[in-house]
Image 1: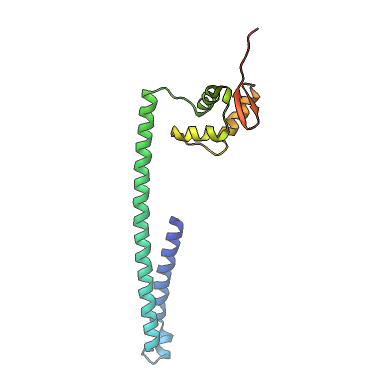
Image 2 (image 1 turned 180 degrees about the horizontal axis):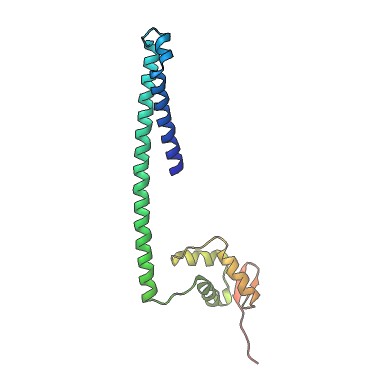
Length: 160
């Protein structure tokens, strides 16, 4: 987005420069016998006003974007500091471990992927769309869970 603003601003300045070149061309002045055509002058004046307004709008957008970037940088810094405090003060439990616990706790009822996602979101965990599926796939490979219809169950291990 900053590239677009810079490009537009450069184009606006290029337009102003072209306007000034037109005004200062000797051949144009000679062609009109030392006088500029009033219609041309009005057209050029209007174009200058438009370009100045465009530059002002671009400057305004630049200030808005700069303030948004500053807010985001402060949020990142605060979040990083909070994360470090969290790591210092509490035990970290991975999302995969939470999925394991949810399947274990579901007991005979079992649990669906939608229920796992809903529970993780309720706990404030952010996750990709396929996170539950990939975790479940690993648990199935390790033969820790079984699937019946759309529900997943913790595999009860019997000791002989």
